[in-house]
Image 1: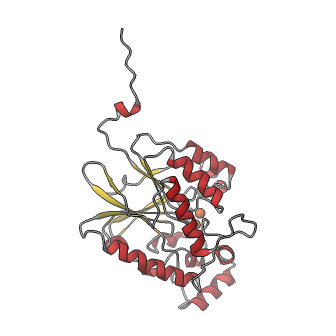
Image 2: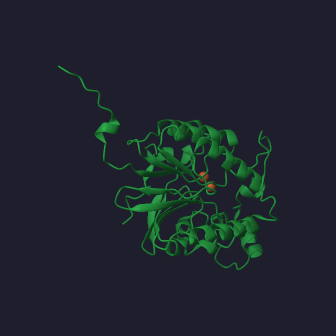
Image 3: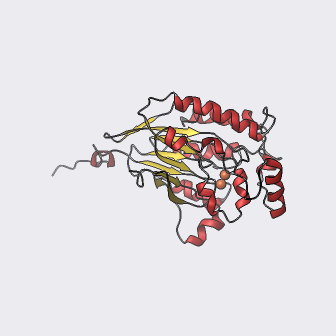
Length: 290
Ligand SMILES: [Fe+2]
Ligand SMILES: [Fe+2]
């Protein structure tokens, strides 16, 4: 009798890989590092989107993304606020844009796609989708009810005892403020998205949600100040999103805005996911898309 070795690639021959996504891995936590260690593709052509908050240190990002890049056919990364933090005891003291570009260089060495690279096109043989990782930040325009400018909004947040740690660690250098860095990023990103062919369908990937709707369920509504910008409110329509993928809120769920699925794919902190009784994993991003 002849024995033939059959690999998973043989079994799956002709079946397209999947487009998977995860965010907010926060690998500073040991229990979250175990999630990264357990993430494996089920098909050799699976892609993995990592939508920010991998960790606070460059070494965290390097470990997690190199682990994942060695397993998945393609890894696409969009930065979160935690990657952009400069902690006081960080061996990599780069701040603001220089820190971001240092992470971009690291990703390129690892073969991971960043917002600075040509947007890759994912295809299952029937449809082609441009996967666009974005860095858009926030500009304090998602203000609490009863406030109408930055000062009154921040005063309301301070009074409520809600101030994001970004205020201490996320520096905007060389921009004068986080708002101005956000406006510059939005303008630059908008230009790139507008240059795509008019009929291109997209998967928009950002750490901060592009629309405000997902923040309506925040326990502390003032926190929305650090979650996005009005400047991207119509991008899912203007740039033909098949689906928008985001993280940051640590409220993993699917919603629909103007008929477009928005999927939060965050893991969050162990104290958040452990009480749910199951270990979070990567999400098939096109499952809810039509
Ligand atoms: Fe996070
Ligand atoms: Fe975040």
